[in-house]
Length: 294
Image (cartoon, rainbow, N blue to C red; front, side, top):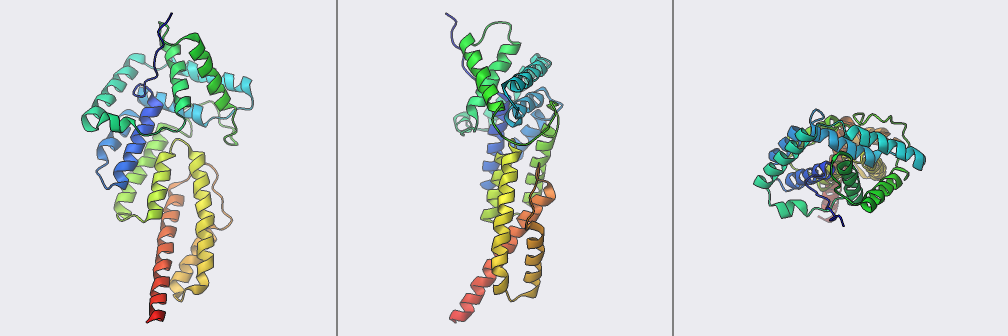
């Protein structure tokens, strides 16, 4: 009987990407130097790299939705066919090198213990990819069938209203995601050196959901409504005309607005500034209450 092979986190490009994003999150929020991990991301996951291309295929499976099982099967077949076009020798070399660099910097047990959303889906895609390119049988037939069924099932789940093509190097490319990291790391460090709790939460949501843009867009839309409501409720209690003008601008910008698609940099910046305005209003309220007490 064929010995059952195991799924490898380190050989799974999708999981590697997720683990590194979580490390960046942990480093930034802890005030540590995140440049090592950031450089790894840009070095190995650029869309010109084989590892970056494979990670995009994982991301496509996670993001894409199909009308029915037949459509899902066609999508999966296209992805698997695309996977065979990658340079396997170069891909394995890049995986070996990035793992080597990670081990030199981090405690490997600590690095791997982060919980990965959609772990079963990542593992299922990994098995299908390995089965597609390996000459010898690596996983038994039942595992492959179960993995394929699970991926097809995921593709048929309702995730988003989208008419994206099967171009796996489209709007969710590694380049877009890496630019997002560039924005986060450079702009947050320069403009927001002392992050508010709300800003930290936004940062964490942005990084951890970079491979699930729909979830992050939903989060931002909910924050738009929440912040807008807070500001509307507070405007009558504010004496400062300047602050009232700021509140009016933000409320006008956020009220009845809904982001569709990927959240843009200017939309993130607006929300970050709105958080600071909420903080400013809270301080004014506290000062006013203190004066009344005295």
